[in-house]
Image (cartoon, rainbow, N blue to C red):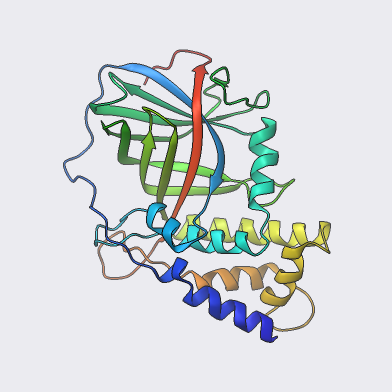
Length: 291
């Protein structure tokens, strides 16, 4: 239909997908050895994706060190959120209820300046968070480990991987996104906010597409009159048979989001860039960490 063609064209040519911004490449020296420091915990609010061109500049990294910001996956999710994908509702439901508590823990001598800092990402469940300093971060599941340095109160870390679990649809499990070559910027001295990103390799990207397709169909079946459902019927039904299939959703994703990172320097893009922003608050630790 005309509406679907217009939307596909708009998404393909959106500044969220096309904008390139210069960024300084991360250090090349290797991970610092973290042998001392106190442990500091933070609990996270929901995930946020770029919804405007200016946000695109701030939410993303130069993942392949070519002088440009990459965040194709996050920019498309942000654009879909602006036209009906219920990301905010999903985050409020899962993270606001305590069903998914996302904790960030750092080991640092100082939170304003420190040349050797370790970071871990923990996921657990518990009481609904209050974000007033009394929430408890527990090491139920370790989802990521990075190392870096704090400069002027902001931790910049890399040298590791992180598995991010992002709610996109209310009432459904978060989408599992295994990031390779992950990078993190996290303000730990002052108002707590951060950006994390990385690449989805071939297997990770296919897994994300399959889960998104399954949850899209489940959402459409459960909410036939939702704004996103009406949009999805028009956009994803490529063969116009009146039925949206998982294969059509996956094909749509691959059409709009081809790989944009060359992770093995063979001249062929083999991974998809994606990044997320988040807000957080200081929290307490349930048990003393050992990393």
